[in-house]
Image (cartoon, rainbow, N blue to C red; front, side, top):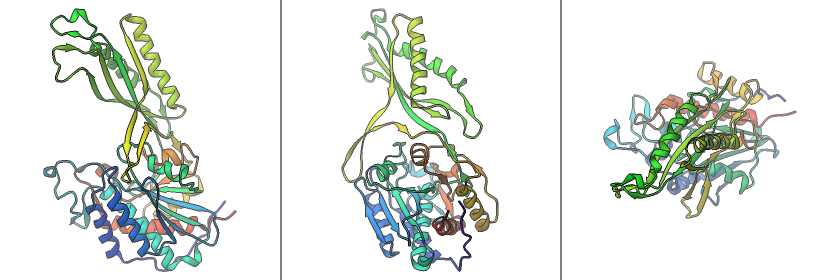
Length: 413
């Protein structure tokens, strides 16, 4: 497999329009399950740019299609439309939905994660339609998905493949990498552990069994386990983190010894770990505590949550974010992306894995589709009160995506 080298004519777009559209996306609040307005904004822009087809699917994803002379190869450019909450206004240097321009950067919630990348992809697709239609052999999808941010386990991306029936030969994720090439990521699961006791009046605690004391034993064992988890030469350490604890009856029944305690923990996975091996590890830990304490009773399972998309559909979601994934740094997709970045921005990008979960955990980890991550903006500013994207990075992202659209759709055997 190889790629034709394309000598491209002038590829600049109307950068003022790109900047204004990026600002409009940032100014349009789109929390998970509330993406309707931004989805309609994106679909309308794709219509203006004359995409061949635009669809808002059954979960609310926006799918823009640009068709070439052949149905193969299919290259998908993907990003999510939702964002984390802005947080307290006083923590921000600007209104988080103002998209104010300061020192040649656009500031606001979702600037780096990841409305800047979305705008660049959408406009790059528009330039393909306008100027490079005759160069296009394969098909380009620009997919803008819902409900990625609250760790909702690739629900929007899964819908594209499992419900819409889309297929892809390559996937490019636009999450912020500062133009490095992301070639892997750890898997992720959310686990719920419960300990059980016997309720009684707190004035006579000896009459009951305190589920919180039993959970304290679990927490100590989990802290020890975290230090023993394996590492991977590319993806780094696997990990676990307890993120929440509650008990029953709990607040406001302060005078009752709780009969049930619950923790939520996040487990990051590296090969050869998977959901089953991680659950078995937790169960063995609980079995050990039960052998040491006849009163100890506990259970462990993958957490499930109920979510609603902006179209009003309810989904029961099992909290498993795909699987760990790696694409070899010598893969043609990785190498072509690295060459393109170096040409556009003038430096050789690093090839490194994501530290966080992305929709690539599904496309690469589950489906095995060659996938990379490449996006403008710096990861360290995502989910912070300093969320911003440099205008230069926004325009460079447009150039990188445009060139990759043209190169990858000319793949030949």
